[in-house]
Length: 245
Image (tube, rainbow, N blue to C red; front, side):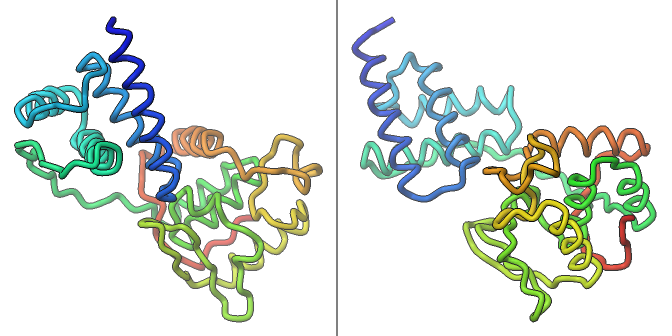
């Protein structure tokens, strides 16, 4: 291993991380762009500052053979960020051919399927969380970031912060969702978080410092879906007619 090249790469990588954080990007984006540079560094023995267009084309062509196009795109964006912000160089897009995009309609969870899923979710926090995602049409991260102050009962809407593209938006608040969230808050009474983590149980949720664990939410949903005989579906369909007991 070339110690000098490795040390230089480490310095550049740390600078890359600093620029990513200064831009205020989402944690998942920061990790994806950082992973792109780590992977590139491993491929080229930490010598990535003077790569030619031919080298990059060869690298990403190999990557396409082992990773999804979505992963390749994230690596491209990560390298573009590194090139423009760390190296201060103009970005030249490698000559890649995008695979044909499959046109698929998403599978939507029906009302009856949603009822089954809610009924099968035994943990109250998760059951209320899944219902909230479904009824408001939210992404997982958007739901986890919800705070008590985001609920506008007067205007019957919810303030979704740091949504896709780092933009805020408002979504309608169905009465059934509002009532359920009110009842749920009366149980945990956290002053800020709408869905505090369960490390201390609901009784100690008011002292939680973080929201529900993303991994726990995903694992539980996967298990419940399998138990209900549901394949992976898109939960982002808004409705206000189902009320989990």
